[in-house]
Length: 156
View 1 (cartoon, one colour):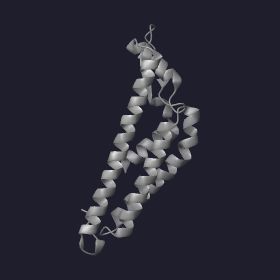
View 2 (cartoon, one colour):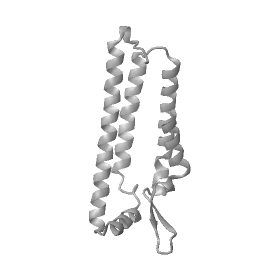
View 3 (cartoon, rainbow, N blue to C red):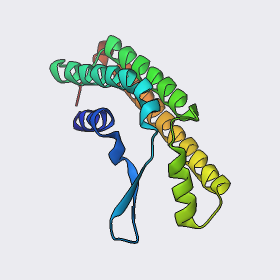
View 4 (tube, rainbow, N blue to C red):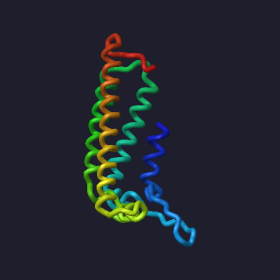
């Protein structure tokens, strides 16, 4: 619950801190943001809605004495929708700041094309990780719910 709040707040209030910090010749760091802040604003309403739904699910789980099939289905639907949002965001070529890729290429002493390939690979790995975690959560929740008597598994 805390990570949902922290990450959502970070993206909403201070997305510029998700950046590469490089110490300049004068000792002052140069900051290059990972995300294109203007493009990120398109996704902020969806991110906030997802965070609120996630918090609602956490509260529901906390209040409920037992898991139930409706809760498991709701969590599964949430995870599937979250996967869709992540795939859309990761496929958005304008979401990553081009200056970030250029700075990465400069620091790593490689070409912009190579740095761009690294970023694209990183996006694919991150996307695969999100999908695996969400699918694992769906399976684990449904199995625990269906194994318990009357689909009301203990929350612990």
